[in-house]
Image (tube, rainbow, N blue to C red):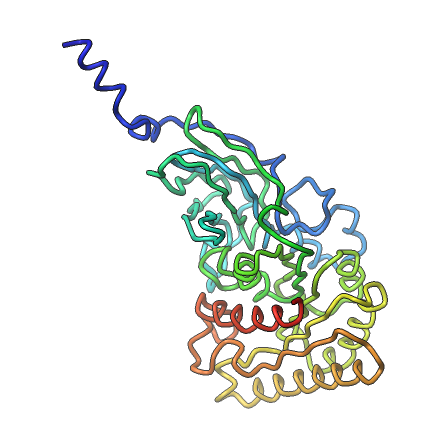
Length: 356
């Protein structure tokens, strides 16, 4: 009888035993997607050497891990995570799963598919099971980090005895990265999870690394950002700062900003995206006037730069960016997942035309 029980145990699937047996591995040395400077070793978007060159709000926001993702592969039948953020960041119009959560995608037949999230705790120490009952095949994963908080550390838990390692991001992301510069919308507000920000959606669809330089309330066409962006060898620069500009700022800063980009990277395409049409602008005359004024200055800047002989400059009008039914935002400004999906559709189409 005893030998029968032992034999029976041996033929049971390993996954029945593995669910409670986890080994955690630090992600500190794993490949990061979306980091603008290759020599960085932290989960920040900029290296410390840039701190004194930036306005303090921009520098502080650059420490948020928006757009950063870790790539790894494993044959584990389950994935869990422990991660630490700075804590204390909450918004009335933004889900905690975007602010502090992590978001997992798996590659299947050359497409990225959602696999699960790591739900954050109320404190700055988080632990969550992401997915279980996997088949034990080796798979490649993309794990997006929190969009609106600083990620201090992260560890991934896998089956005891399973294999996990990182890999070269160029095996799944082709060509030069696309650099996105913008506002809180660019940073991810108010998607439900990090992978639903439109830059992340485009990254997975096009298999091109994207660099998220969205700074909540501070996408103001600072000249230093043009210098920093142009230090990145990109396939395209996408500028989407309308929501953080006054009409005067749009008039005064758009042309010098793009000229600075072109001075350092004359052959890299620049896509200027119009201010989205807020649903409330249908009723609010002040908002409606402001959007139209900003977009008229953007269009004037685009035409002026072309007349000056600049090449590879493109303009994306506001019509249809998030749909025209008024259902694309959470508060009249920041986007829902639906709004991001629609925005990604339009920008992706334009980028494919530009890059290819």
